[in-house]
View (cartoon, rainbow, N blue to C red):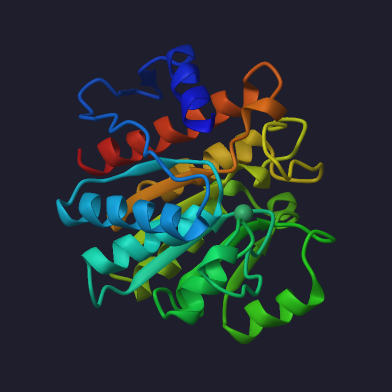
Length: 262
Ligand SMILES: [Mn+2]
């Protein structure tokens, strides 16, 4: 339902913004993946294969979910398409998503970065999680991300500094140590009042304007090669506001791609 709501929200936005016309952007909707509902492992494999194909032909993908666990499959596909790539990962999420898991069938929205760190697809020093919240993560997993050298930017950092300044710093640091960057947005990082349409919506998160400004700045990176947005859950949404925010964040990434090539 997430991808459908995203597509339906797109026409509510125009192609013009801040002196940029998005119309020259070449963009193709590849449709939905037909995922088996009975096997997490096979669903992840299907997503991984699709991701590998897209990164192999050198296209810039924007994936829409769905379960944040699929982000793990997306970056595995990326790693398979680009062996030896030093991948920098910028994650916007209220949660660390580094839970332990038993096997391929128990991968969930809480595990994608655990898996990425354990398999070496991404090193902790090249993973930054932005918008994390107090009382939304456990001490156990907080110790884990610190041990792995992951950088976290708690949501209250946005009270002290502007979103663009924070994004520029995260971007600079990841660009210095990475060959390529991937931006992963879990929409639950945005506060529930402005993004109720996610399974883990809660107050005290990023404002939508902060998320937009952050993505606007980060998407200017010449090293950015793809992005995804997950946890969009239309049954929880109100007046499609979360789907519209997802559409807006997509346009910001598209704009960043166009602006950097000017
Ligand atoms: Mn998440």
